[in-house]
Image (cartoon, rainbow, N blue to C red):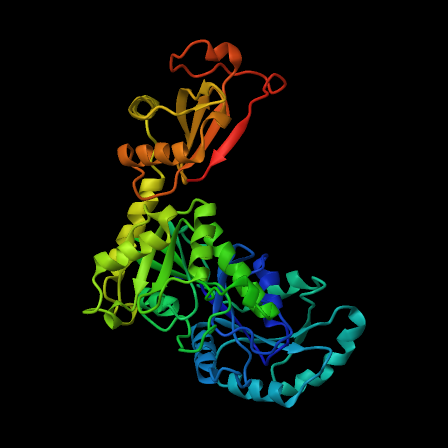
Length: 467
């Protein structure tokens, strides 16, 4: 049973996104004084009493979008109102009623659903006496709150709960997502089109205007009986060209989406060359050891002029450190190959969660050392006494050695490649730690696990290789 929805609506700059973040308990929506920052519908599960609802943030009603997306924003607002069980009509308690508030009230009078009139920015009780004029809007009582000062949150939640349909609301927020996908890339690569294809509807605004998406938008859908969360993100641009606070927050949320994802779909624009932004984004994904897929979108525009093999070779040349990342070619506009991308993402998630037996791992490491021993450094040769996988997602392997400094970057890349070639981690990043084994343990080359010792005696030198 789907969760009931509670939509927050109102004119621009009354604090809808601030209220949304406040009730959700975390910063999801971008909050900025610039009117019209929010465009898409943002959704977050919120517990109210014993039940859960989906809280929806919407764009400001009645504003002319500077990028001529007014009709798209209004359509998103109408869909939120249509789907909502309860509507929170937010106004500015300090400014008092303005003509645009009356226009919003006129749109809400015929919806046939509970409309709760809430006055935000009432930071202290003295301001409560100034909200009397809002009664003329015709929605009865006015509740004074302050998202900034955390005032009257419990009263607002209780009021929402009292107006929910008796049979609405679940005892839990719904099943956790079996897979979280971050959809990232530079501007205008078709990320929102891909999201709408997954959602089988207009879940996010699609436009040729660069920077249409500003927030990170979570979209849940079901595939093969499993819940998958797709996170649409703002198009990334070079940090040096970020000029406004909104662009800065959009970039920060895109990076946060990468960190919280299980698999990253890095969208590339087939007709365009890979840019410095793509390289920086790919580096950020690798830095956080996220399984990734290079999704080459708009392939229909170059089909006949390019073949997949040629484009794949081009990507490998430009991004050699990510030569293990698989590649998919699709046309999101037509939904072509979208399901294959989802299947590949699920396969990568499973691959990253694999645990290799210690014996098998040590045999691979031993054979790699035999096939190509490390070069001498300072008249010493590097040795690996023991290897163990200590974690999954990402696969994390520790090598106990006679000195991490005896293994240079080139050899570590060779060793990582050997692990990837012979272990089930062909397409995912591997986190590799080198640790200095104790002197008394190093006297024997037998691959035995070192005995546990107290923290006081531990003076190991550790080094992380993220190749």
